[in-house]
Amino acid sequence: MKKIRLILTSIAIIVLALGCEKDGGESKIDFAEGGAPNIKKIATTDTSINLVAINNNVPINLGLTFNVARGNVSSMDVIGIYRKGTVVEKAIIKANVSGFPATVNINQTDLINAFNILNTKADFAITDKLTISADVILSDGRRLNMFNKDGSKGFAADINNSLQFSVSQDYSVSCPLNDASLFNGNYKITVDDWQDYSIGATVPVVYNSANGLLKFRILNTNNPSSLPASSASYFDVTINPANSTVSLVSNGTFVYGAGPGNSFTATGTGNVASCTGDINLKVSWKNGLNSDFGIFNFNLTKI
Image (tube, rainbow, N blue to C red; front, side, top):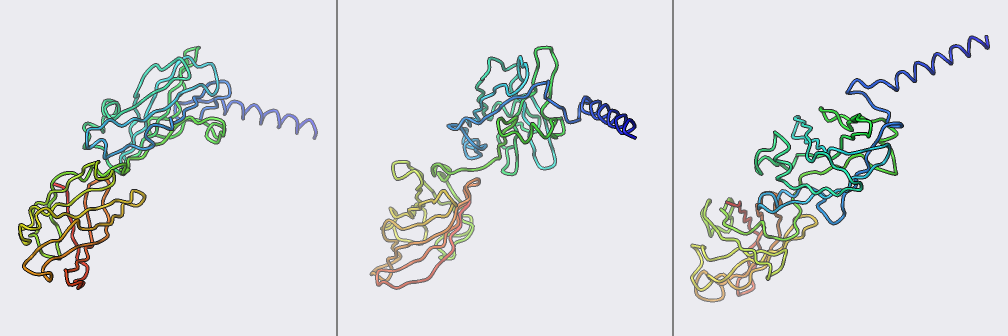
């Protein structure tokens, strides 16, 4: 019985060893005698794909360092897995990276050139996801793919769960508000419960960093209802970048007729859409007699 147990144990070890050596191209590879990269984000570069920057033709900067975590690695191809809905595409972003540790910086032009599903800046969307990794080329010429063409992982659990190194980094498309420059331009009115403007009317919105990095002004110059005396008036809007909420105050009076009862000041709250630039406000009006007139919705969409 003891000999039978030993024979069965030996057979089990042989079967297990054969199973671990298999690599049909889509299986989990044991990199113990192969190789693996160590990929880290550079803290001073973008942590996400900044859609606001892309739409304003400002270069993004996905900065990473590539180093060798395991194995005798001669070079790496920096690859990306781009996910747009149910569509997944794998592409080489930068080939033949060597001289480790190596620094790689990726901008939107690199991504557009690499992926077939990205042809222009308009193809980036807030639900998209990007994974950056590497195909590793060993000194003996073998190529080890961290990710398969369908975006699935090509490495085993010991690599995936390592606390010492990371074989990939993820980026989502987002719209961080580092300033209010997105809100510079002409807007059309979609809701005006105060009834100064007709729906679809054009209103100028101005961003000037000298007024505050997270401030913009909604000018009164096109207001057909107020008198010319208030043409220099505006809403001064301040953004809270943590949650895209806003507060507003008028810089002066909005004049609709003679006397203090027809001169109004405004305060309010609301929110902005950090990717599209839409502005949604709730404006409280008070006249020169200190009478409150209630809260009125005032919504604008960027043209």
